[in-house]
Length: 259
Image (tube, rainbow, N blue to C red; front, side, top):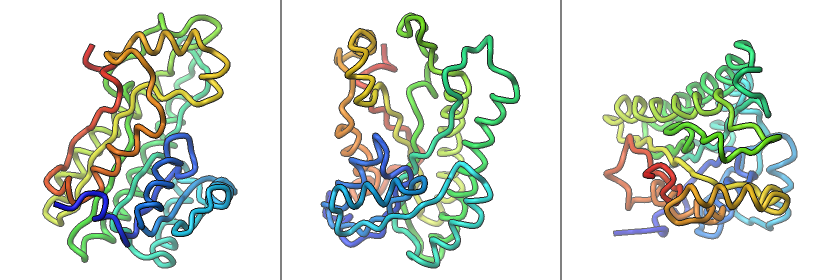
């Protein structure tokens, strides 16, 4: 049974591919010999590819939280770069720092509009392009907060708990994954989700060690995740080793959601 070697020479897209979790995935796919398309907001993918000297990775700029940009941009990407063998879709939307009592219905709706219709359009467009070939793998990204509610005790004032609109859209991503998996199963296109736990960015780790301790205490492993630890589970779902896995959510959360 082939492992990472089954990715060699494959055409793989990573959206949000220059980000905190997307970056390590992009870099490892490049190292494994895949032909990678790193998609991110203007300038980010280009800077990431140059900084890390990724020889097999092409950068592309597109805002995948805008339905118009998805409708126009994805068909052009398919024409330019070819139909991918696999996709990792990390793009997300969320309000910033708003408590539930303060959030307007319009703000809540804006997040869902930026998160869900573009993801639906992106996944359907790519899956339809994959159908004639008879196979493919698409990995979406949810969150532990698509499964459980944030614990307000972790977010000591002036922090605000992870916002409700983020969790609602991440829960919807899990159902979208299941629905797409069933719909495209006859075409041998697999849909799965990675559901990360606490992976705070380096700035938060440096500036708020008390918060990191509170996050760590919520996990069975008593620590936060290091971003490189998202790579193996993601690549597994892309490879031939996961050829009989579809419609699943793989939690990478140190045991957060089982406690």
